[in-house]
Length: 199
Image 1 (cartoon, rainbow, N blue to C red):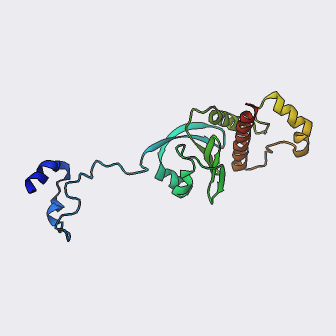
Image 2 (cartoon, helix red, strand yellow):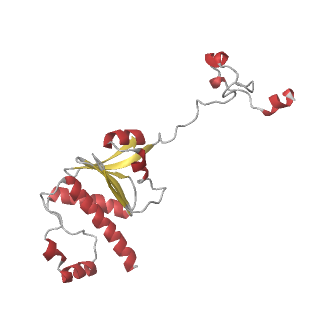
Image 3 (cartoon, one colour):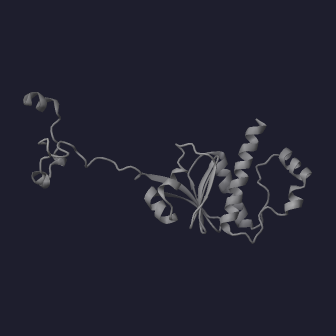
């Protein structure tokens, strides 16, 4: 029986041989813990780098690669909040206000908004790219205007209701950076939903 067991089990790799092997005490079953397992090549969960688009308060953008734990420390967020941004999972639209950041999951726009920057998961989705372009435009011009990708029909409906007349400018200059970024995200989500309704 022992001969059959030795033939079926793979040989112990050299990378798993350790000086401490001799110090393991056998358990109640007489076996040593983790015997024959090579743990050195295993990948830890959540350690992969993700590509993010970073837009700062002056409208400059860059692509950065950051792992999950660095992002958690940078934005002071728990892991469950970053899980909302994962494109592999489907969560309902959510806006979470945390002490140092706002976590936004609105349809296609999934981002983290802080006082100094907006961090979006890098995506080739047209709404994500439009969000970045519109946010940059508003930050550099300083004057808020209605989302540019809206069709003439939607603008006509808005003007017939007096939307702009009642509420004035949609993004006043005195609003903090976080609220201007959140406003553009909400407009992008509304535009996405409106285009789906029209289809």
